[in-house]
Length: 240
Image (tube, rainbow, N blue to C red; front, side, top):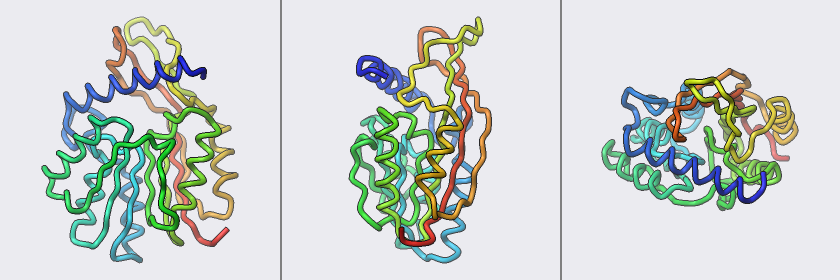
């Protein structure tokens, strides 16, 4: 993707998500924001079997669809959750939701581009990246972020990644496929190969692929977002 298309894709995503966060609340019926990802919460519980407090990093946290439920689950511990997002509106909404749900002492929210985020080395027990990494600028940036995530993970720590691949955007009324405005649109098999190579030596906890479709109001005409959505969860079991 050239720079002009990248900037156009970023702009379209910003408009869509800002309107979404303005019109809908997390953990309430109406959109995909209505509940946290089930695998994200199951892996959190897995970690809590062996640890009484956690350092958690939520990349591309948005308004807190996963961040808030994670913080609620950790509220009675000494855990900390850091949410990062490119959009100032998302971070403002996350902070407001942290106050609303009484977890502002657990959550720290920062406005930052995940592609350029500093990740403290060997600091995190759990790193979540749901629907985030496909908004990086290139495959090179994707690999760099995965490496920083690895370096930032303690022994026994878990990564939960949900990545949309082979993305299509289709007009709902006509079925006409649009030129997809997604920054990093990897083929499914290539993404899986990258994950398997980057995480060689880690324990694979979950690996699945599902066809995903979401109705969106992103352009002048209603569209449907379609993808091959990969869930890939791994645990660090030895120093590399």
